[in-house]
Image 1: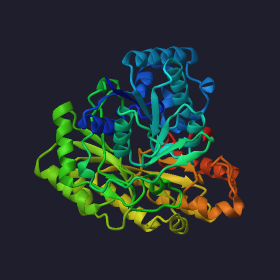
Image 2: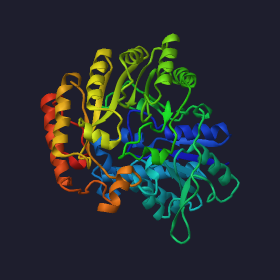
Image 3: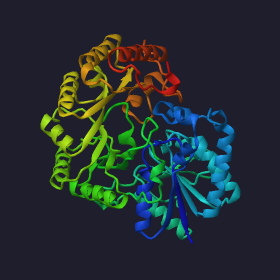
Image 4: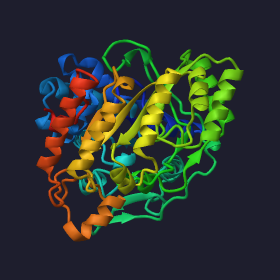
Length: 471
């Protein structure tokens, strides 16, 4: 029997099951394939005790280190991985798929052991980090992976299943990258976007033990099911890879279809807490409002949260309706409190919009938080001080939140990279670039300053900062 195994590796969230492989499983099962999902991330997390802190978001980059450098209990980790390999052997899959989060070394170690037992098993890797300009290149150069799945995965995955079942080569499939016999990375023609999101089957979470998942403070519960209303992004921020990875256009499903999925999960799993995985839940305000109207009209009692963008046309009326429909928390990419920097980033909103939205959110009783990017190339010292003054102005609205702060990365395939690449050149470290006085050391200095400000004025815990920049 042709069996496929989809594995979610560490490190990923410990509060929800993986959405990406659950979509793939649903698509494959709809077409008659035997597919199983394993959340290796949560299995490892649930076995850990003191090391649970390494699953906090600020430790994400830590998992990119080689296995032997990881600070978690190394002896236990090796036993766990070996036990997991034996489980895969018993399952006897013909095809294995991984989403690439931030852990290429772990994926490669697992695949190496799998291939030692059975070199004929095909292995594919997808996800936002699977692009050849990111982690995808090193994954392919290992020669342990058959191909990368680029962009939306459902249709590409389905075609790979059919080709593998019929013992045909997958090299001509759209939307993949692979290594040819000359050690060159070949990227096939980009696959067309799925324009009708409603045609995609609802993600299937039936393989997961919901009791394993925890809240952000490592306590139980309440468990959340991840859902997705849209794909892509309506903004074109110069530091973001979203449009490169997903391609255009921004796609939003119908409110009726979204409602049907919510009802389906409530019926199947007896869960009424949800988290939207969209890059921006408010990308289409008309559909968002209609969705809220449907939730209210059908008297469906749920709570939900997600990411959102700051918009001039998002008013109090909609926010209040969202609250009535169960919206309890939103995280916005504020990024800067300087109009000059926001304009350079391509944000489409102003400092004044940030202040107005903060006031309206507080009035609507929706809790919210912000992410901030320190040291954009357009950010001068006076612009950084404008961000501090903006935070000071909205400090009362932010009490009890934990802002996220990161130094500006210049990542390949972003507008920012294209703008400065020829003039300055960049090495593989997307963090340590230098443009004029805007050096890595200067950005770290600003992070320390803004973190001190947050501790004194907003949250005594300080900001969430990537582990490599821990103060």
